[in-house]
Length: 132
Image (cartoon, rainbow, N blue to C red):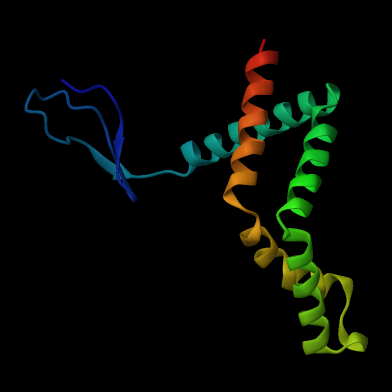
């Protein structure tokens, strides 16, 4: 007998109580569980960020990120992207907002996986060391 709620994209299946192991009661999926998960995730992110700030680790991680991005040439690539956007639109027609909007997605994509992995590893190590 299964007591877990099973779900597909648009339907939620209640636990089977008939003994046949089939999906008994089908009903439309609600967004409440998704909203709850998003809310929990937001709260968790806020708590982690607060702990990083309080312990000074956030600034250390930012400095490490800056150094790694310069070291791998990411900063130079981003400068080139900015120059490209300015050249396409003309210096008089580009706002800072336009530049940020045009460069941000490409800039994020250009961050090497090794840099992302190292930062994530450091955050995990910090949390493991300071978990309560």
